[in-house]
Amino acid sequence: MKFPWLAWGVLLHTALAHAGEAPPAGMPTALQAESLRAQILPRHYTTLANELPARVERIHVQEGGRFKAGEPLVSLDCAIQRAQLEKARAALTAAEKVSSVNAKLAEMKTMGGLEVVTSAAEAAKARAEVNLMQVTIAKCTLSAPFSGRVAEQKVREHQYLQAGQPLLDILDDNTLEIEFIVPSRWVKWLKPGMEFTLHVDETGDAHAAKVTRIGARVDPVSQSLKVTGGLVKPMPGLLAGMSGRVAFAQPAGTP
Image 1 (cartoon, rainbow, N blue to C red):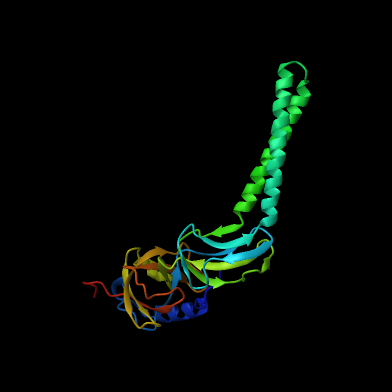
Image 2 (cartoon, rainbow, N blue to C red):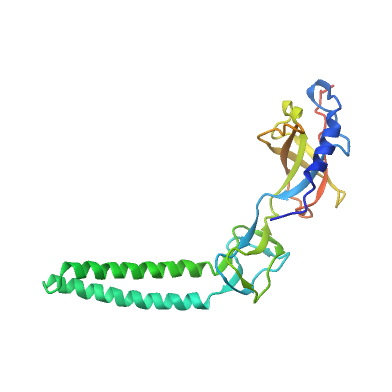
C-alpha cells in the first residue's frame, strides 16, 4: 500500500544540513525548526486482495470507515463454489455408504480386501474434496486482520475481479509511529527512550514523543540513520501521512 510519505531525499537533505553543526559535549543543542523532518505512519497497514476470481457482492465498510478486527470487509459472490460444495457433500455421502457396505461384506468374507481398500480411499478422496470447497468458500469473505480504517477503496460493488486483485487499503490509526532520519554520527548519543517533540505542520500542535527504534544499518552514501518514534500518549486528531518537524531538547547539565 502506498502512502503520500515525504521523499527520502527531502529527509536526507534537511537532516544532513544540520549535521555540519558541532554538538557540544557529544550532544546537540535544541535543533532548529528546519533541521529534522518527520512523517506519521501507521504501525500496521496492508492491502487486502481476493484469492478467488469472483464478483464483488458487497463492500461492508466504505472508504474512511472504521472497522474492528474480525469484521467482514468485503463479500464475494460465491454461488458457484457453494453449489460445488453441495455436490462434493453428496459425493462424500455416497462414497461413505459404499465404503461402509464393503467393510461389512468383507467381514462376512463375501468381499475382497482390494475392493474394501479402494472404496475407503474413494471416501477419503470425497472427504478431501469437501474440505477443499469449505476452505474455498471461507475465502469468499475478507475479514479485517486488525482494527482500523479503510484508507482507499480500489473496487466497486458488482465489479468482477481476477484472483489477486487489490480490494482495499487498510490501516490501524490507533497506533501511529513517527519516522525520520538523522546523521549517522548521532548514534553515539541517540538511544531508545529518548524524548523529543513533534511539531505537526497540518495542526500546528506540538506533541511529546520518544524514540522507540533505531535503524539497523547506516546508509553509507548519505551517512544517515532511520529512527522511529512513538507518541507519549494517543492523539485522536493525528492522521497517517501528516508530517512535521522533530526537536530534541538539550538535557539538563549539558554545556
